[in-house]
Image 1 (spheres, rainbow, N blue to C red):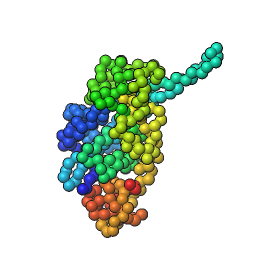
Image 2 (cartoon, rainbow, N blue to C red):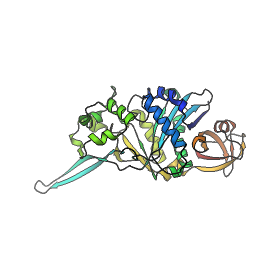
Image 3 (spheres, rainbow, N blue to C red):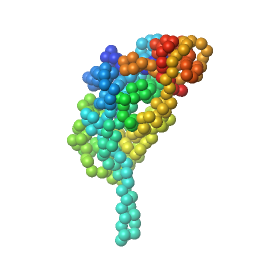
Image 4 (cartoon, one colour):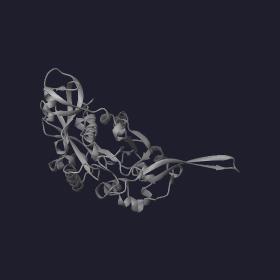
Length: 336
């Protein structure tokens, strides 16, 4: 089958809504709410239509489409600059060391401090692959297409990129981290707060979240145990991020305690390793498997293709058809 990553359209709403119902909660960027998804699609349309190549509070929503059936297989998002409309909060893990001369003892307390340290960064998120399509490297295609999009539109993004991984969620759909910390100040369960945040934004956090550092030792064991851990279904995503050069710098999500990964934009593997070259021939012998992107903004496309050559390329017919590439066109490519 042939798959391509492309910009979202308003007509994708029904397919996105059906996928959102499969996420299982804790997936703020893909809420099972038609109004919120419609607003997100509208915001994405405005971002793709923006004329100025500068960072801003823009969201680019990408769609993985099966070209043979027209079915939507997955989605992923890029936030050009977080914290511009609502504060972008994280908890920073730190240590406070105190010494008592009289007791001749040194005490080290681990603490969580509410910060907006990542304000202004770009963010990759909202990646969800339909359960029936979780094979054949489609998750890798969808994830890495975001970096090639950033490379194609570099001036629209910040100097740092972050990715928030979903934290541990129990079988009932609750979050041990939320229950042990923030839930005590908000008077609502994790699912309710997560859905409210997805639809209405972060301002209620600024209104109600305690601003003083939290001593981790004072949290229930269940909450302490999951700080900085990804949801089991997100471990593969964490490995892909690490392969791209992302690292956990000690920041966690304020809702579920999941890790926030970060990297310098220009050092991300798929961005640093991408090369632009012209296509000299369509068809021919099979070559190396690569991720190939072409076009800008609404014309952006990304797919797997077989390439041969270096300064000039040969591309297989199926890959060229998926991308709409002809001889003489330039493509951006990086090894799979």
